[in-house]
Length: 81
Image 1: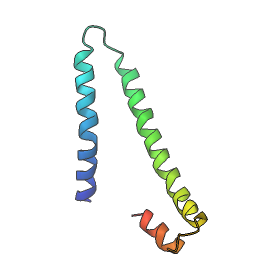
Image 2: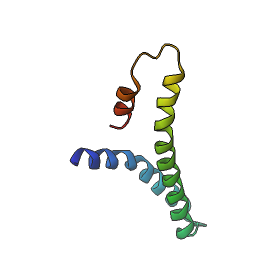
Image 3: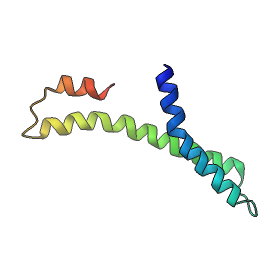
């Protein structure tokens, strides 16, 4: 659990730093905070959807390749980690 929290913190730190730089540069005519938060939430939601939708396709694509000798159950269990 601690490892997952550390990975989450390390992966979000660059995005938060970038957001702070953009907000600091945009002091003269700031965007509405609600709009900025909505765009961030939509971006995060699209990443979650992309992560969950790509895993089943990876198993399917491997089964279609002629040289894929790894059994699908081992490949899918490796993708779920």
